Amino acid sequence: MLKEEHIKKINQYKTPFYYYDLQILQKTLDVVKAESYKYNYHVHYAFKANTNSRIIDLIQKNGLGADCVSGNEVKCAIENNFDSSKVVFAGVGKSDDEINYALEKNIFCFNCESLQELDVINELAAKQHKLASIALRINPNVDAHTHKYITTGLEENKFGINPYEFETVIEKLKHLPNLKLIGLHFHIGSQITDLSPFKKLCSRVNEINTYFLNKGFDLPIINVGGGVGINYHEPDKHAIIDFAAYFKVFNNFIELRKNQELHFELGRAIVAQCGSLISKVLYIKNGINTNFAILDAGMTELIRPALYQAFHVIENISSKEKNTIKYDVVGPICESSDCFGKAVELPETKRSDIIAIRSAGAYGEVMASRYNLRDEVRSYFSE
Ligand code: LLP
Image (cartoon, rainbow, N blue to C red; front, side, top):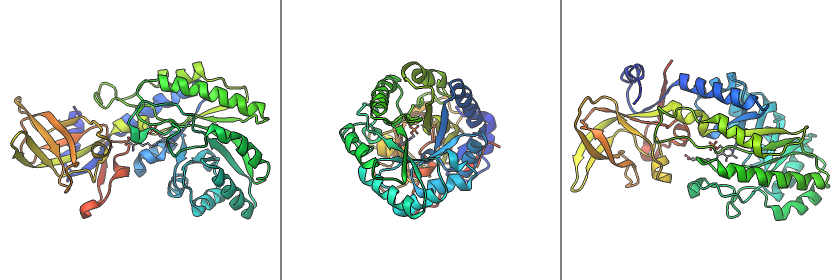
């Protein structure tokens, strides 16, 4: 349950809104830094998870790099004082304008996802008289055992360059003088709660790293992406994931050469637990088989349950009732998928009670929409 000090703050504001506990975020960052610096690993924050300005400001002050997937994310990172030499740019469909902007800003590295993209970046870099540093985003064909919409490293996925294309890439690079290949990039998926897919990733990385060395490419950068999952069921007990165990897997299983740096792109594990979506109960409606608690927030504010059948803890933070009842907790949007949870056990709930939907700091506010001409969602902070 959210702590009393937060509930007091929350009660001052008009719902719906995101509430961020910046202390949790800082504590999480402290652990990320301590555990990654042990091995001299480099962590880039995956901007796609949350671009709220207070959140990225705190992350920037903690010295992380930025992992971006659009020109606007690159712009947002640079305008918020992230060092351009710590900005990486991935994405299967980078437009010419986006590439040009990133070239102008001299970002650290483009993570290239297709053969054709190599030609395009080379051509645009030539026009700007620049040498673009690139890493090859490789599809390692490792199953992340997560929801199919957030699996990215299987052959069937659109992401990355496949191993059967390596020969062609190597041949091609000889004729692309404005590209400098500096690394290999991987990302197998998101919300991965069992560490074994990361072990598998390490062994694929080792094979591919050796392959490129044998072909004459001694690449200084290995980037293993992000994807480590959080505990959506116990947000208070497991507010911070076991980063020690996560980084240790890489330390144990990846074989880096002396001159090689290991980079990560973490999103969810950094920001998910610091955010809650706060909403008010508009109506209680008794259906034939079920009771509905109808909120003033819906899939327009948090789409994860509708899109991925994602689970989030739902709490009634204003009720003192002992008696509990099961509710389908739904939003006001004209879609049946606009449901945050079915048969959720809550203390007996009334109109105007305040509901917190937890672990919503990642892929919540950033994925909000204005469908049904809803107002833009607001945000407030613990301090
Ligand atoms: N690097 C790349 C290339 C990525 O595509 C992603 C996430 C990340 C890093 C960060 O992954 P994380 O550490 O956050 O798992 N909207 C979905 C998640 C989509 C993830 C997309 N890529 C959700 O709400 O679960």
